[in-house]
Length: 174
Length: 248
Image (cartoon, rainbow over all chains, first blue to last red; front, side, top):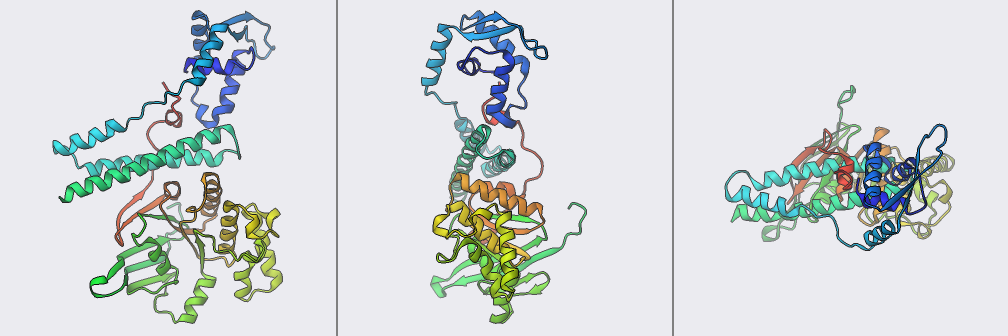
């Protein structure tokens, strides 16, 4: 679990670990299913060591025997503010795929169109899986919005594959 | 596939449609064979101008082929006389278009019941069926609205209800999400998914990958011909959470 995400979930108010977990599950819906509960506590411990989070012993509910209440330190608040204003975006792996096609074609290792085709099938399967998860979400759920984002990205990738296909079809014929 | 016998509902052999002649001859549909089983959802994908809309028109009897055969439920339709063809379009085929094609001056429920009235159903029975269908597409509370008072997604759902009013053997949809934004597309996808679950046969021409991905059977078309067919069986590799950038 990315440290900044856990910090940001804590920005609302001092919280128990299980409350952070619930907030994440709410935000992620089916995408949070694989989330390992232990990870949050590991991350919290790290954040505490780094001075970004402070904890107080607290009496948990009987059925939720959390021993600690966590809150952001001023340094933690600063880190959250920096994270919110950070505009870096996850690296895409288009270049790797592009080079795969070039290498396959130039070394005669494989037909680039077959590679494009296999990739398209894989992306369509992913699209179908995400789409199914999205259809199962109630209207306007937080997780539905995230799923929509994944759908739109997959669509963009599929459009690029069409361009790859056109390009390598032309090269084939020349 | 799931225990029931596969029944071919739509069958095409050597299907061809030419426009123009001589130098200007365009073969919009070029020697296509197709078998669609009852209950299947088939997506035909391809760039604009690849002939996919023409194909749909031939399958639904909106247009006649230059060559080849089309059968619907075991009956040749390409040789039907004009009146028989009109009747077939009214009773056996439901059409959904990109631009909805609703009558602007009729309310939602009037649009839906219109084909049933034209097919000779009593006004009472037609209205009852139309109301049921609007309920099914989640628009019971919009029955008396004019199309102009509905959103794009709602209009398309009305158009889908209209396509279903005569309980067609097959629904043919031509770019049904072409004019819709992302949220409205989801509404329509959800509806198609429900129709599929209910056993409705659907043939959808589209370049929307979302529809293609949910169809299960996906045919790619180029220059009037089928170039590839994919059945999306099996799951994708990796987890949804990885797609969202959550893993690691």
